Length: 523
Image 1 (tube, rainbow, N blue to C red):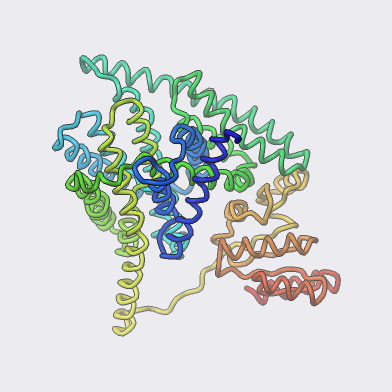
Image 2: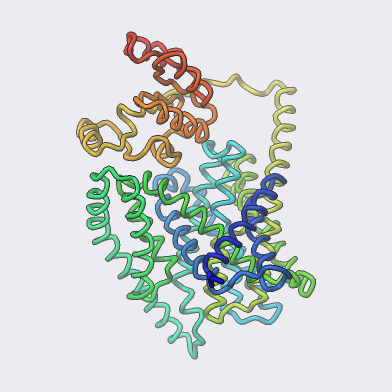
C-alpha cells in the first residue's frame, strides 16, 4: 500500500473543509467557521480520521504567506487617505483599548506581561476576509460607512504588521529595560533594512521580470511568476533577515500591488489563496481543544466579551465623537466585532516561541468561531434597525428628495480602460487615458478599473465567451451596474442577456451609432 501522508492530509482536510464550509454557508454563516470546525473534526481531540498535524501546519504556512501577500497587494494609501481623519485615530484608539483589555484579562489569570500584550493584540485585530465579505453582501462597500470600515481595517492591518515586528522581542526573557530596547531596536533595524531592499530592488527587478513574462502572453507563466514572487520574498525574509514569512509576504505584496500588474496578479493568486487559506483555518481548528470552553469558561467569555462588547462600544463612541452619522458608527462597530486570520497568525507565532500559553490560543480560536458565527446576525439586526429608522423618517416627512449622482465613471473593456495588451496599455497612458492591465473577466481587475463605483460598463470584446465572463464578473462586483455589450446576432444577444447584459447592439450594423445609443439609454 502506498504511503501518501501529504495527499491524505490534503485531500482529507479539504474534503471535510468543503463539507463544513458548504453547511455553514447554507446556514448563513461564514465559511471560515466551517473550516475551523472541519479542523476540529480531523484534529487529535476528536475521534475518527486524524490528519497529520505537522504536514497541515507546513501547508498552512503557505496559506499565511498568500493571505499576507494579498493584504499587501490590496493596501492602497488612497483608500486610507480619504477617510484618515476618522479611520486612523479611531483604529489606533480602539486597538489600544482592546489590547489593554486583553492584557488585563491575561494578567488576571496569571500570564506574563508579554503573553498578555500578545493576547490583547490578537483580540484587537479583526478579520479582513470576514469584514470584506460582510460589506459586499450587505451592499455597504461603496458607501461612506464602507469606506470608513475599510480604512479602519487598513490601519488594523498595519497594527498587525507592527505586532509581527515586536513579537520576537516580546518572546525573549529580558533582564532589564535596556536589553528589551536593544532587542526591539535590532528587530526594527532588520525589518527596515529588509523593507528598503525589497522596495529599492523589488520595484525594479520584480516589475521588469513580470513585464517580460506578461509579454509572452502566457497566463500560466504569469500566474506561476506571481506565486514564485510571493513564496520567494517570504523565504528570503525568514532565512536572511530572521523576519517572519508573514511580514516578508506583506512587503512582497506591496511591491507587486503598486505595479501596473497588481490587479491581474491579485486575480491570478486568488484561487491559490482560497485553497491554502482554507487549509490554514483547518490547521487552526486542529490545534484547538474543544473541551477548553468547558474547562475555562471564564477565560472564553472574557475574550468573547472584549470582541463583541468592548471593541464595538469603543468604535461607536469614537465614530460618534468624530461626528460621523450613526450608520457609519454601527457599520464599523458590527464589522469589527470579530477576530480571524491575523489573530491566529499572531497566536501561532507566539505559541511557537513559547510566549503564549495553549489556553490563550484556545481562547482566541473559540472567540473567533463564536464571533464570526454571530457577525452576519449582527449585520441583519443593523439592517432591520436602519429600516425602522428610515420608516420613521419617511413618516415624519423629513427626508429630502434624492439628487442624482454626477460624474460616475463608465468602464470600457476591449477598447480602453482594461486591456491585457502591454502595447495598448502604453499607448493609452501616453495619451493620458487611465488604463488597467489584466483580464477584464477577473473581479479584482474590474475593481481596480473603478467598476464598484461605475454607472456603466461597455463590453466590446470579440469573443462571446469572453463577453459572457466579463458580464458575469461585472454583475458580481457591482450588481446595480448597467452592462452594454456588442452582440453578433440574436443568439449572442440571448446569451449575453442571460449573463446580465442590460443593453446589446450589433457591432457590424452601424456599430458606433448603435453603441452610443445604448450608452445614452443606460445613462
